[in-house]
Image (cartoon, rainbow, N blue to C red; front, side, top):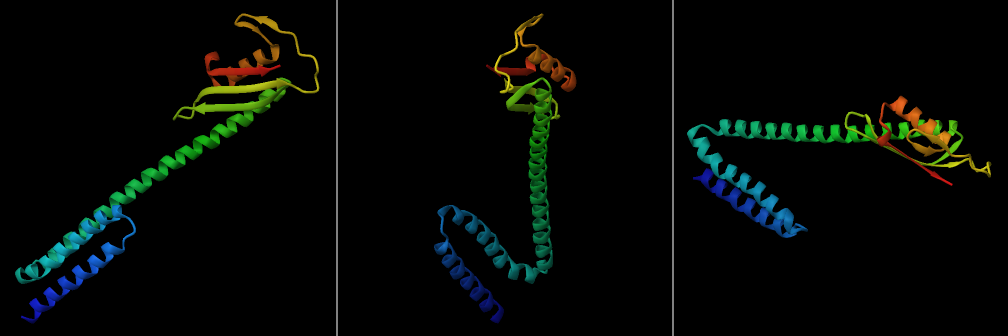
Length: 182
């Protein structure tokens, strides 16, 4: 009879404690999670004496530990997937920055000044699109003459830059956008 009294006493204390915790929670949205968790604990507390009479108390604890372990493994998988996605995103951003720096050097070699360079990559780290805004070097007050090429009329420096980008990054002309400010 003493064990039944102790069991009921534990249930009442648990219920009072949980009621106090629920009233102290700052947001209503947290209450559903606390209720779910405490409901699970209440089921365990109710079943523990019954299972100890039958002799399956250790089996219950083992199942609970096993379920907790598998839940932790699932959380670890989700965390790992998130970290891998974040790491890939960071690598892609850094690779885009490095390509932008290379393109700026190519622009400088053509006696142009890069004002803005943007690069978009595919998930396989291939160049998807290149956007360049450039000006002629500020020390030169006259602009070079435009020349006629098979694709249209352009400045020779821009034509050479475009060809260099096409060859180096293995992209097509439609993937390169060069704007020259005059």
